[in-house]
Image 1: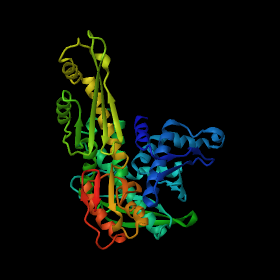
Image 2 (image 1 turned 45 degrees about the horizontal axis):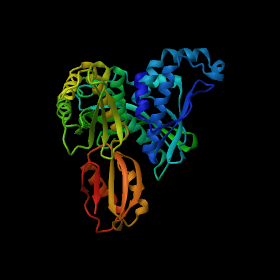
Image 3 (image 1 turned 90 degrees about the vertical axis):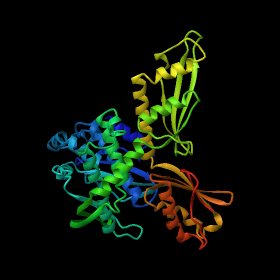
Image 4 (image 1 turned 180 degrees about the vertical axis):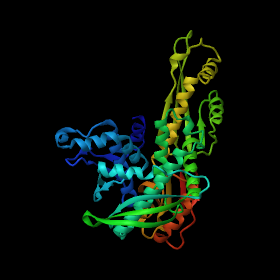
Length: 455
């Protein structure tokens, strides 16, 4: 349950619907995700899969509310025997989901999602024999995708895109679950297998929308029409291992060992920096994340206690995690060096350090799960020939989410989240904005990890 609870926390911006068991035994829910287009549809589908997995893990039978008597006993027995398989498939993207027609709800894209218990079980077992073989440069998987025509793309194009994303997610899951060489700064420090699986699922979700460069080839095996002019396709997909390993490890590095700027009292700063360095976390003044330490001495002269708070924030001051020590564990008489002594003792207590380590890991996971750090793109208004299209153009860039546009003095400003490097983002913006900018559009300047300026 802990894995699903953690993922629910990480996907805090998602919107979920009620889970229902239908008369025919299908399990259905609805989910939403911020934005428009296939990326939002995929995220909404992932959110629904998470909600379905959470429901299934908490319900050992299909008996649910008013539908309990209408579920056939043999179907319920099949479900009960195969719950673990269903949950695993929903977590790693291996299940075939029946997707409804997407619809808009405010700034969100929503859709209904259902699984057929009997069909899902059969589909879930198709990858049981898959192994990550070191002597092969590729992995071949068979996946099912579904799609409906939208924004100039045909239903077949959408279905094929959906299948390719599922293939990437499946292979990432295979790689991370069958290899123990992943970063000691992340997977090895998480407190249990559930949290390790949460990291694996998070990376799968992040990479599932980045099939470019990862898919070597694919061929269509079958297709069938769906309601409302939709199409379901079955593809055999060959995935390149080398770029997938590189990107997976890049995500692990983002989660486990980002560069941070330590902001603390002079007495406490060197101790915290030393400890972070021992964890493999680089510190420096130009970092994109801040680790902020605040302290307070409490109690009478004869028994001073240290109350310590450590926060992880980005340059836009968004809070990703917080840790507090337990002041009751140690007390010392007041003196000119009592703060140094209490700090030193705190950092020699394994239980305190373990809880701090876990809090920082969860904070770093939170950064990636929310879509990366917040960036601010400042463009002088006179350089944009079609400013009304800025939101749509930036939203199409891979890895970008939560785009918001506003005006500030003589600039149009785009606030967004991006999971990659700021310099990489600047180059992609340069190319994408050319279509809606004046011929004199300047090159972007990376001011810091938060700000890109076109001036």
